[in-house]
Each structure stands twice: as structure tokens, then as C-alpha cells.
Length: 195
Image 1 (tube, rainbow, N blue to C red):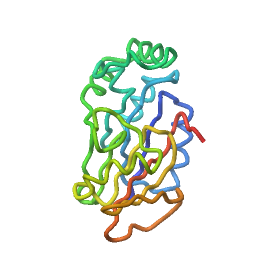
Image 2: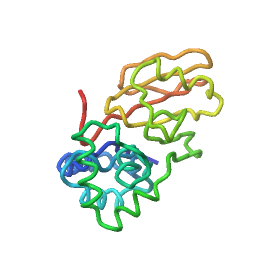
Image 3: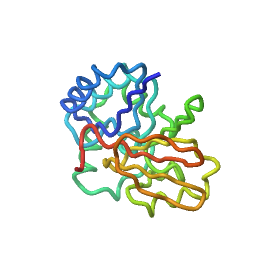
Image 4: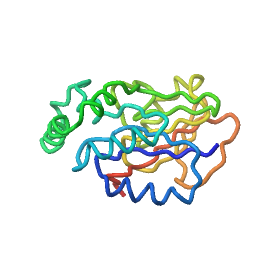
């Protein structure tokens, strides 16, 4: 089974179209989305419709939660708040209902894989993992983690290998899962990369 993972589309239809075109040659069996389909870009409905029709499941991202009225975003900077308010007005009833229905985590136990938007430690707080210090916060829950946890949120491609008492950052390239280690991989962003 070959999984296609998308994250942080942020209503950027052009970027989403380009990524899906690149995925055509990858022979993907099933797609999943790690959240933030909306926020920032100019095409929230179009992106929500594509994702709803393409992916098997999507996790809730912080921008999705804000647009759907599931979190307080008053502390966001002004441009982000304005985009979220605009997207809330633009979204169709179907897309809004979809955002309101999304869960914070998807457990694909048959693959020893979990999907979430931010850190798996406190899912509803959408905390970042972009450095070993943040990944270390996952050590107390080492026994609960699957072999692989895929996250979005930071818009950065990062790989962290955890043992029961250590965290090592690895280069974000192909790697093999080693027995006894757990991995947290931040997959980057479709619609607003920060590289």
C-alpha cells in the first residue's frame, strides 16, 4: 500500500494542483491530509472540495479549527485573522460542515502509523515540532507512540528519531525505520513552504 500525504495546503489551489500532478507518477493507493486545508490563500472552497474528494481522511489543522469556530484565534497576527475570517465567509456549507467534523488524530495501526497536525503530546493545542527540544516533549509518551508519526504545522521537512531517552534529528531524506526507535516526521507544506 502506497500512501500519499498532503499537509498545509492553505487554500493555495495552484500549489495543490502542482503537487497532485507530481504525485501522478508515484502510484499512490490512498491519500491522507495532515490539516490546514484553508487559511492564507485565495481558494478555500476549491481546495476543500479537492481534498474532500481525494483523501480517505483528513486531520484537523489549527487554521481549519479557527475557520470552523473550533478554537480562539484572536492572538493570531492581523493578516492571518483576516484570512481566516474571509475564509469562514467564503466556504460552502458542505466545506464548513466537513471542517467541523475533522478529528485531531488518525490512527493507522495496521501500518504502525499515526497522523496529526502538530505535536502528538497535546493535540488540541497544535504545538510545533521543528527542533529536537520540541520532539523531546514526546519522550514521556514513548510507549504510546507508533513506529511513525507524521505531522504538519511547521511547514518544514524534519525527521526526528526517538529512543526511550534521546532524540536525534536526521536529514529529511529517505531512511529505514530501525527497531526500538520511534520516528516523528514533519512533512512540509503544499501551499506555503518555509524553505
